[in-house]
Length: 313
Image (cartoon, rainbow, N blue to C red; front, side, top):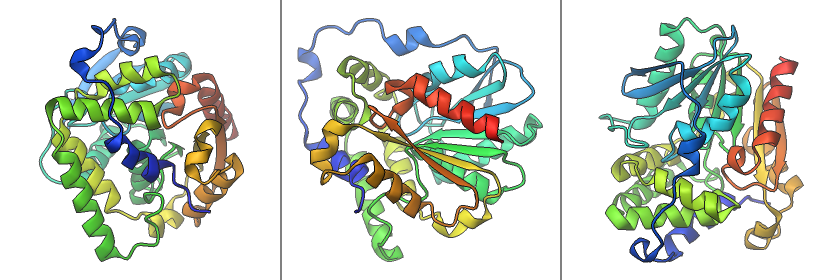
């Protein structure tokens, strides 16, 4: 069975029409901003914001996904800062950060590599969400001896249901999606972010609304460019080069199953294993009662899975 979580609901998020933002009640203080722990250090590398929490010998690098900032990692950073050095990044173009020229995917991968080199991090574990996970896999392929592990939260080497596309068709599809997303600006972009968070992103609608207010601070053109760049890539041929252990966390929310051909949690795990075939050291686990932002829907379960993974290394 082919997974439809990303593509079916992603398309639905463009069709879904939430209440106009101007008709909604004035927003309350954002829970994600209120929950952010204070960073011990803040600096930039190639346009990427880095916030360090903790000072342990073992380093974790947390990479958010599309349109997201470091706020998505607040609970994970808080859980691991007492024992690790936790580097939370925000990619250029997201969460109010200025975009960079050129291919944003390559630029972000290079910025992550520079973080490891400049800080002399020894085999850090990359923890990525969505496109952030795809970036982590790309870096683990490019620099296999420098990476100590990868945790991919609902992020894969190829966009689900595009794995059988020939390269030329993939390129056309990626460019079409980029153009479609780039056309959303201002209130239309904010409305799409709200629809996405409510239909794909999060189980709790209050959290979805707060997340959408923050993701709407991203540059729509940068979001479109990242999406196009990710859709155009198929990293599966390089999976065999990854030397570090890889854990893929697959969120599952049973009420969504009727929209996805009644996919079970076991179906989803099997499909993710299929897309990760060739990875030498692979584990795939389910995070139950969670949508795409599993680390927000089920923070304790995600942190526990990460801790088990770190303990096994």
